[in-house]
Image 1 (tube, one colour):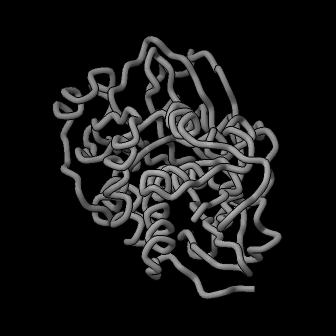
Image 2 (cartoon, one colour):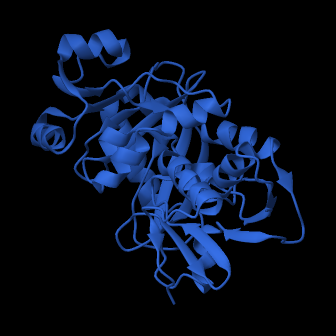
Length: 315
């Protein structure tokens, strides 16, 4: 058996890696991941419990295995947990988040200061999800891509992982636009992703090292893939300022936007259309759920199992 993967984003790379690891030759038909790939602009948070606050329970269940999978591929994974905070006026949002999620403990102000000294005195309470992790998406994509073969001609079984480009075959696929910024602020040090439950713009700040942070992300029902809007950038940076005033003096390194592929229920799908297997619809859970989908696809090819996310033939 040989497999050709259409699309070199996080879904395609994870499936090809999983298949090769099982002795099934898989090659990528498509470019190496870069700024035009949705995965390029990801936050890289492996946060199954935080996502469980609003996502289907399957996201948490399958996402719990993601950090181990990435680490097994040689990708550096920081296992420092996630911190969720809110301003005093939004204390109710933090309480709701706590009720709707699991795997956390409540911290008071001294507990926050012990974890993140640069946030000392800024928040009265926080939720700490100790078992969560994060990675650097571009580094992860590069590591996987560098270990995989590429082809210019499809052969064998074809698996389509083209994201929104696959709407010619997946008519119920939609785009959910996300806009983000990469900034440098050496005055601030964070050891883990911090989520701010802001009323207008829920924000995450992911440390990349050397004073660099990823800020994200908007969630707009749109498949527009152009640059971020001025309104989105303004709201994103305003929310960052609410987290810590020093971020107002940060150097803006990059602004980016792309549209995430999603199905109506925001869960991924494995679907056969004609003779092609489609794996798509990671929504905002790309690095969290791609390993689980990859295992499902590999089990289906290797053992003829019916994966949890498998659809019947669909027009």
